[in-house]
Length: 526
Image 1: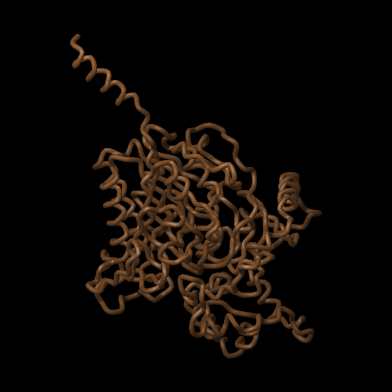
Image 2: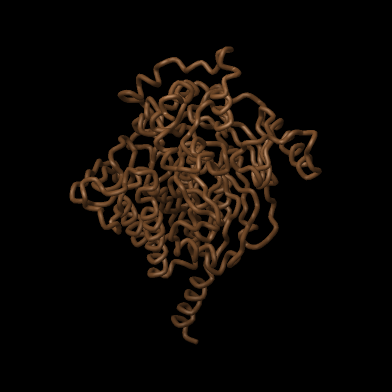
């Protein structure tokens, strides 16, 4: 063999043998509960793309997020639970490192496209490791759907010709994949869908109407939005296939919290309602799908307990991306389970949640797929009692329940050290998603509400035996001192009447009822 020919042959062999870094596409769907995916047992929506990815990959049955978007994003991006690094809503502490930083340090091209809501100015995405960005809610909060306002690589861009925000950010994702097809890339895609308002999509017949029909009702165009979400994911998968990148790309999909509060759906033969913002399973249980042809198990269902913080070590593990030794993550890789192996699964999850931050939790509990124990001692069978109406009594527990109770007590005890004062000092009272700008600063009525002293939680002695107060406590399923619409309507067969009664009592139109609103308006609401 002549030398030039030998050289070419050896070069070709070396190129063939050289390891290729794994691309990662991580898709986070906004306000998208477990019941929304048909493959999970959902009966209300069309999700053929996600169903196929689940059927040819791994469907994760027990993925749990925080009840609200920013807390989940902080845990997801850093691999650290909220108790250890959360500041306040709409903000990520700039001292944190994210999966963007880790992938960038490993030589990956990095991009984030979709929803930000983490503050830190126009420089925020770059600071957290992303080379490129096309985002909504980076330094402002304009509309996200028709005629959206976005920030694209540091420039504010406002659309006015009926462009659809989710299409724009999806197209940017496709362009990024195309431009980076010859090098390893990490695409983090926190979608703008399916968050309220439940307005028309380009596939809805009334998309171009000034105010689309049904858009402001409780269900509105939510089914259309779910279908469009699935369609956009399908475009990403199609682009990977077109560029022959599919076999070298891990795709992971999850929801960021439960479906919007009160959103009705059919799930496994029953009516359920979205529980965003609550500690119920309908607030935390979200879809999870992992797909990587030829690398992961195909058609597998994984029932292991997984939380948002587990995603970072898992995708880093899959891509052989190192996590710095000085970064202590709380998450645990479940990559072995994705390969069909046993792995080292968590047998329960610990949750600390307070969207305002601060020293103490709004909800603190430990749970598995069957039981839940709150730090205040309330213990529930969440399979038989998913609305958490009837706490279990220790004296009546089965052996299985006793074992779970003991396990949870140990887990809660392991997390009882106080929060780091550095994070506690950064607390800001949560004024609601639409009452804050992207930097967590309250505006207008929300600013006045946030500045006002918190209402007293005590009940007047004269009202302690009032049957209305008893009814309030019964309906307050997550025991947070307020009744959401889904809690209110749960025991009322006539849903139209329930909606009318709820709106009549909701004096400040914030979507929830305080005890004063519930008791004070009962008479005129009947």
